[in-house]
Length: 147
Image (cartoon, rainbow, N blue to C red; front, side, top):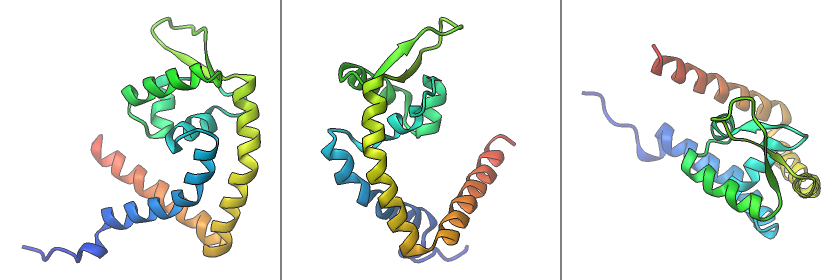
């Protein structure tokens, strides 16, 4: 039997800690706008005029469908998202309202500053390479799940 890695050397723990370190600078900024990080991910995914069905939005934002449903209800009540007609009546398609896009535009300025600070600390090339490596890693694991 192989020896278990030290707790701090565990891949899952390292990824969780990295996620916390990356999201920490955004938490206060997003909360000041009255949003959670998950709600901000939804707004960010829809920014720029994207219309997405809830299945795609759920996958893209890494949010479980029941949670996304509650979130969309809240964001709709706040006037930030709206439902749009879909070709398939079984699908629910949403987009940002003008108010939602304006909120994104205001928040994105600060978010870009926070991303720039991360890149300055870790390195622009290293950050890009890390994202590419993590995306390849995820794709590899997902392809194993479907094999």
